[in-house]
Image: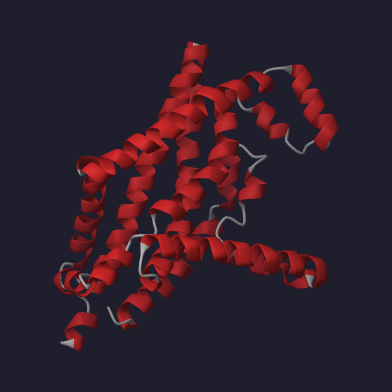
Length: 280
């Protein structure tokens, strides 16, 4: 029985895709998922209606640009003022930090609840451990892709409400932003898969993530101050490239895509090993 459980399950790819699709189905059609979508939409409606719309008007003001240049120095945030769509520049700054936080909150239950209820082993026998692990991961990425796309489309409409001539640059930038944000979320989702395998609940998995990032911030502060030759360790932490992406437009920001991809591959490899060898 043990050998069968750990071996490659027939139709593993098909099972993984079905599991991913089911995760998306639960979000859209189940009551709990629908309520979560409504709450998410309301939060972003407030963000777009006030911070994004309000800050966009400042970006269009030359006096504000001179103020920022004087306060932070030439070239520090110059790319934000070069965006063809001011609303998307503000959205970019907010989403770079907000979506990883959302990921930590919504991806903590990839396995924790099933493991606590004792149903994870049953699911792994039905679909295979690899299919279950990668299917749940892919499902969470599909959910986050949907959420990112909804907010990007809303930002496009917000820009169009100011000037219909912005529709083409808004769509182009929106596509690039979506791609960048999904790439950023990959290692966060993979990391939450690990914590979800360890934790007994989604809340505990999110707590583990908060403690991990807090600890890494302290460690990196010490390393940067005392052992700068070890600063490369920071590249192991999801989101290490986000600060550098702040003053970059989406197409340019894709040059850092290699980092989240490598982080994701490493984290998924660790997670797969845990899934295969762990006692479910």
